[in-house]
Image (cartoon, rainbow, N blue to C red; front, top):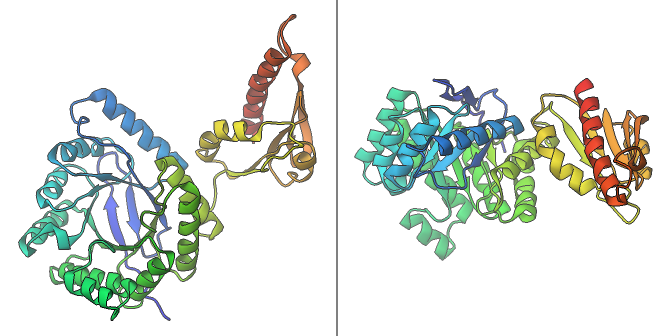
Length: 383
C-alpha cells in the first residue's frame, strides 16, 4: 500500500512560544497532556509560575506540544494565561462548546483540538476555523471510537464495516468540511484502544489523504501496558512513514509519557541526540542501588543537551565490563562505588573515606551516596 506524504502544518511562533512545524520534512514531535485542572490559574501567580516551570522541564525531556483540557470558561482563561508565558505550543482540548475555542483563541493558544461532530452546527465550525485562520492557529480533528456518526456506528454494529474503517471515514468527513472552507492548517487523529484498529484506521486514511497524522493508542492503560501498546502501534506506523506527532497515553505522569515517546522515537530511528541512559535490571549480586540512582538522576540526565551514553550498573560484573561502551558509568561493590569512562575506572569511592569518627556504618554509607553523586556530576559535566 502506498501512503501520502503529509503536508506541513505550522503552529506557535508568537510571544515566548517556539514555532513548530508538523508533517512535511519536520521531525516527529512528542505531545503530552496536562493531568490537572487549570480553573484557578488566571489570577494565581504562584500556580502559573509553577505550571510554566513544569512545562519548561517537559521541554527539556523532549516534549514539543502540551495539550490542556478546557471544559469550561475558567479553564479557557487559565489556558490563555499559561499560553502567554509558555515556551512550548499549547493545545486547547475542546468538546461541545465552540465558545471555549473562541475564547482560547483570544490568547496565544497555538492549536485547537475539536471533534467537529460534537461542536454543533456548521456555522460553529466555521466560526472556529475563521478565528484560527486570523490567529495563525492550527486545528486537530480528533476522532475516536466513541464519537462515530450514527450511520457508521450502526454499520459497525451490523458488521458491515470495521471500526477502523469507520474511524477513517469519520475523519475524512470532518476533514472535508475544512477543505471546503479552504483551511488546510489542520492535523487529524484517529484513536482506538486497540493496537490493530489504531494501525488500520491510520493506514486507511494515509492511503488517501495528505493531512499530517497525530497517532496514539487511546486509553492505553498504566505504564507497562500503555508503553507496550504504543510501541507496537507506533513502530509499525512510523516504519511506513505514517505519523507526524505522537502521544503515549498513560495512566501516569506527563513526564513518563514524554520519556516513553522519546525512547520509542529513538528506537524507531526518528530522533537522535541527547543522553542515552542504560541500566541493568538488578539481581542478587547487587552491590549498588541501581533503582534508587536511576530514579534520582533520570529526569536530569534526559534533560541534558549532551549526546552521550550513561550506564548505571549494579555490580562490577555488569559495570566497567558490560558497560564499557558508555561514555560514563557508575557501579558499586557494597561499601564502595566505582565511576568509569569507556570501561576504565576513573574514581573509586569507599564508605570508610567519608563521615566522622564514631559514625555508624549506615551513616558512612549515606555519606558515600552523597559524595558519589557529587563525583558523578563532576565527571558528567566534564564530558
